[in-house]
Length: 246
Ligand SMILES: NC(=O)c1ccc[n+]([C@@H]2O[C@H](COP(=O)([O-])OP(=O)(O)OC[C@H]3O[C@@H](n4cnc5c(N)ncnc54)[C@H](OP(=O)(O)O)[C@@H]3O)[C@@H](O)[C@H]2O)c1
Image (cartoon, rainbow, N blue to C red; front, side, top):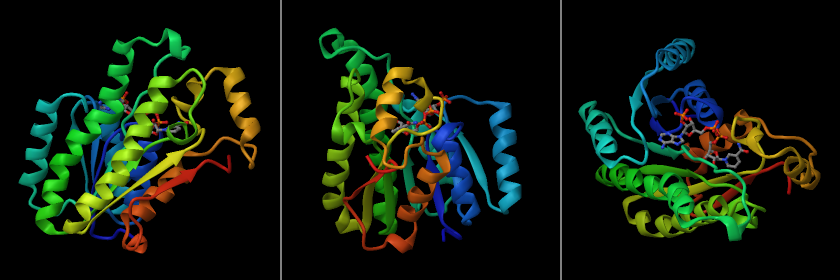
């Protein structure tokens, strides 16, 4: 499905990001696997995936909130002189639960920095490369919280809502360059982040899930891979929920 394509995936070290690297590799894509810090275990893991599926996986290190580091990573991508066919904005964070009244503006800015502004900056750089090649697919990882809201997670829900707005906007603005932009909105997924939710809140959310279970990272990765592929060639500006029915 992705044979010969090259993808940039952030948040690649664990959770849904790591599952997405493996899914893309299994469909034949080469991947710039982006993690925050250099890490031998990560490199071993990426090498193992690359060998298993006979693709290239190039580890790249940058903190998504650091534009200088992003620029250095973009230089490395450019130096390889291959197309950047898709960008998966996966890296994200959630802060400690708190009521709206107790949410400080500093905390909001920190979450927006990671979940929204960093995505904007990286997307600007990669979209420039995609515009030159007149093709590309950008997939933002939002959340059902950005559509429905989430108790005690004001800054997280609003940062993901902003990402959804950006997705719809950019689908229109970048279509002249033949770049598609979509978002995937996961429900509750079995990762460190998904399991960070307080037990009573998790139970409350799971009670609303039609399928009655938590999702697997691979189930989200499958949809991301579809959106990166030419099989979704007539889909743009969409927010696809992967939430077991909520
Ligand atoms: N799990 C869920 O239930 C759920 C539901 C809806 C949406 N999502 C979204 O799905 C995406 C992946 O989350 P996950 O569940 O896989 O969570 P996770 O296991 O906590 O992984 C988050 C990833 O983001 C990276 N990251 C965070 N801040 C970063 C920064 N400043 N610079 C570089 N990398 C950074 C982390 O890197 P390190 O390994 O270096 O920390 C990690 O690889 C997120 O955008 C999240 O909001 C998750």
